[in-house]
Length: 277
Image (cartoon, rainbow, N blue to C red; front, top):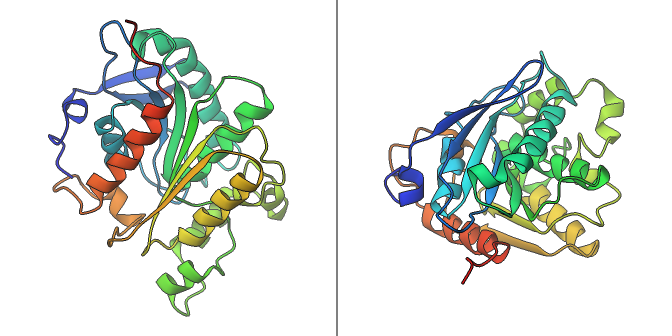
């Protein structure tokens, strides 16, 4: 996509370090406005748990920034060297740190969100579950884009993508991420199968008609609704190439960028306090 498409995306990125052992790296896009606040989003990149970095995650980060957010993208530890729950614990530590840094980064009382694509969508959903269970920090919403929520590879949308093949990079990623079969029953590892969803923040679920993760994304959205969670779920009708296209270099505006950005903007704005009069 074209990084000059919005004044938010065009802002220079800052690299920040979250204290810890080892410290975590965040790349922050966007800056707080004078006398107001913008949504602050902790963003997790994709890569099937085993690959990806801040550069490969730049597409969604730029879309979020273009929708008006301050975006902090996390370089989380990758499997198989770091299996569940190490990436999730790193994400929660970053979320707690960002909550404390809101006045400096996004403005006083800036609403806090989690977001991610593909495996990052898993980590965003799981971080929302963890924040609910630990009763902190308060989240304004979760944004799940082509999320990788269930290790089952029998959905119709995945079969449409894979054909008769039963092995794929996503199955491989799950095998490398989970420590063993018991992890597949843990709601933080597999949010798509979580039994208790009440009390979670509102959700925006974005997928594409051609997205292999479409069915698991929509199934999770429906389960959230059934638990009384406010959900906005959208299937982009044009070819998205998601989730793979989200990791491509930002050389040109993708056909789905405008539609995705508008859904992001509407969801973020709904939770943002108005500027003081």
